[in-house]
Image (tube, rainbow, N blue to C red):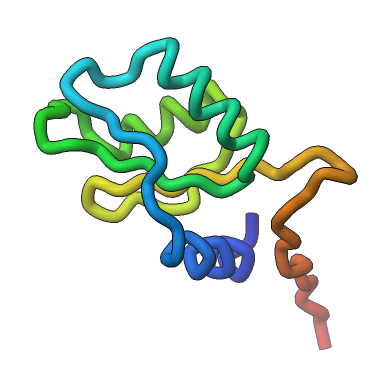
Length: 104
């Protein structure tokens, strides 16, 4: 993912509310499955890490991304934004094209 694409997704994420909360039980298999399902439908989701969760939000983001085959867009404080590209024909978000730098 290019920095331009990441910036575009960050802009989209500003307008959405968190749809999951991670609490003191941390990352459960049920939560992981629910996040994977939401990513399939929405492509871009925001997760809130509650105060009673003792895990580091950055580590949680990486773990969820690995388990759901998603990409971490950003982690700000206790908010995690994840993106997973939709299957062909079902894409909801069209990312800016990655531009190639030309040597002059």
